[in-house]
Length: 289
Image (cartoon, rainbow, N blue to C red; front, side):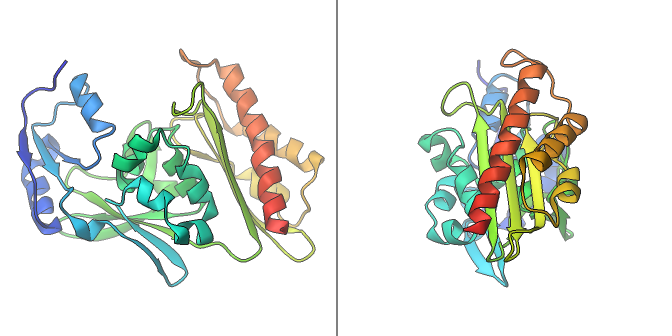
């Protein structure tokens, strides 16, 4: 099946792109990598009357380390982040997560901003952004605003971005020295969307006591899910089997995965508990060196 007819524009500047979005309103759609939008249009699940191609906006493709904050332009290809030595050195969780996105061809074309805006609940980048306490910069013709990841994802494939806005930058506060991370997922086949994914970032002191921790899961709710009780249970403690059991109990209470063609609710919950223990263990070991 082919998509319905649409008008196509390729602006030379961000300002021009924002003006086109303003004129198109609900009928306009940004396209960059097109990894999600094109299949959806081909299946006629989306029928925008106007496509605005931002691939020419080189100003939106960059990776920077400024003021102990990692800044990534929305048009940056996932493969560029994957191959960045700086990202590997200062933000290991993101580097680890991005290798699990689809296949090489997917990452060569897919953009950082596109995956985050699409907001698939099983996608790696939204989960990593939430775990790393990141935020996004959203730009319209009239203003630039910053939204924390915890507030950006609203429900299934829905985010806090209006039809006349563009996600222009992703920002992530960088890790402290004694910190560890882990990103793990289970998929039916290599390159498939994860049935369940888990990510953890934590810091410890010289005695191995956990000083901060963020644990999040993908594939168990309509949006990436931050397990809030994990911080209360683990902060000030050394990781133990008993504490991990308490965290998995919180996972069961806070999440409610649905059954579908790929996995039952019960199996997703089982995976969530198993992966929770794995990422906690690996993040703690890495934090302690």
